[in-house]
Length: 221
Image (cartoon, rainbow, N blue to C red; front, side, top):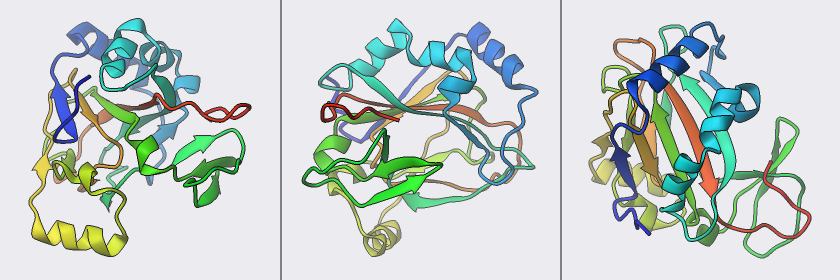
């Protein structure tokens, strides 16, 4: 199993030029939220994303970064444009959505977003997750590509003050990428995204997978 020693890596040519163009054409007339630019539950709203996310080839690729069978837990279609040019401050992705609340040591705090229960799982569970961001357009510094602090996932779950100090003391990497490539990363690696200096289409299919088994009667939402 690849250990993602740095917490992330870039896979070139995950999608062919034809596949990229097909997605671009499908999403060309899609209206994105003006503030965050992301459409959640994208696997349910776009059959093409659902088919890609659950395809044998992608599940094999994702499974190579996990210790068990990968299960899709989140799918978002992002687009950063002139009309939706947002800033994402330094943070860790550290919550998951589940079908209902349950009591288990290390799980919490709980919250409700879009009528769905969300919870912060223990670090051991986050280490059984992997995010894959599939680029449908070139991602560059100019159009607000993702920035990452290598190996910061090894720090565990950080308080906001610790994140702020780490940002001062260390230098990030800008994850520039070509269309068709994919950025694989642990969700709790420190990452951010600046506003685009030259806004254009920057579409990304963001998928999160996990190999952890929830308690009986609870499912990923």
